[in-house]
Image (cartoon, rainbow over all chains, first blue to last red; front, side, top):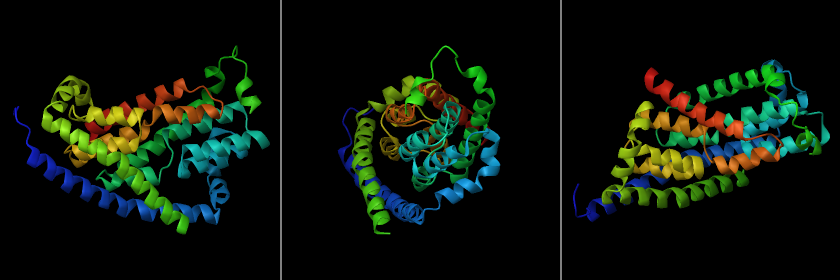
Length: 163
Length: 133
């Protein structure tokens, strides 16, 4: 290890690395954000949610939980959570549905923008996206089927119902 | 359309604001000889997922803060495509844990199992991809 820090190398690396990386990432992020916002404006989420029925049917949950799930998958956890809270208020989303949707979303959310972010710094898009979706799906399937076993009966279901 | 452009610029700016300072600090740590020490300590665990010890910093930053900070660290290291893919996948499965946990809790679920699930999934992904690539 050198005692004297190499300041010239340090500065050169900073300017070259930071400038190039930021530009490169901007080239990915800005178009994708445009695309996402256009999708949001077109209000196609309910239609996408309906399309997912053959898959989501496996979870045996209320159809009212489809929209929050799709919203979170594409637009992020916070947006999804907002839609969930709304759905709990005015739909028949029960506690089991909540667990399924949340389990899916913590593993797999914002699949467009976050994935693009990492592709922009050189990751393999397929490998960071597909296993993530598969895993979310499998774990959710397990939660959906085993919910009765996992749930602890002594804990009152107050939180979910209060919402 | 305008909103999308604005949002894209805002995300880019946010990313720049967070990632560049982190990148500068990491590069400095490297030049000053601090990072190699941290790396040495974490190397045995990181070896499991095929990453150098330095990358542990990116994982921890990603878990506790957010992806942007982790990206700042990644930019400061020189990783291969395989390594970037591994760490990207691991980070996508588990990131911003404090913040996202609060978000999930607001919907009314117990969140600790979810955090454990994310970390487990993250390492499982890292180990499998490292072995399978």
